[in-house]
Length: 100
Ligand SMILES: [Zn+2]
Image (cartoon, rainbow, N blue to C red):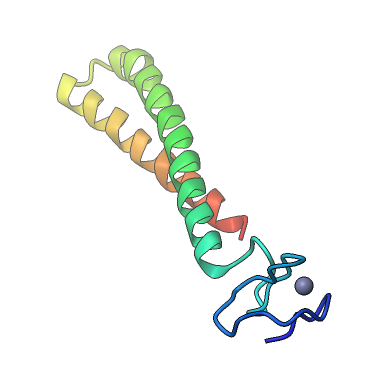
């Protein structure tokens, strides 16, 4: 297989040119499908984690102020906090997906 960029002959099984590093498979260098999937997975985890944490804090604040003011039962407060964390995680993952 010949390199499109420098013309050097490489092995048929090579994915990159041994001389200049150009991709021989047609994929842009550093932008293969598996690389994108991995980075998307990491983004999902980071965005989901951060937004989930924000949701957890917001839920805790709401439970500690508004719900306490309304004399809501304790188990409903924890439910509210968990729900907010879940919604936050979902929003974070949605934002991560939108970037692709
Ligand atoms: Zn080359």
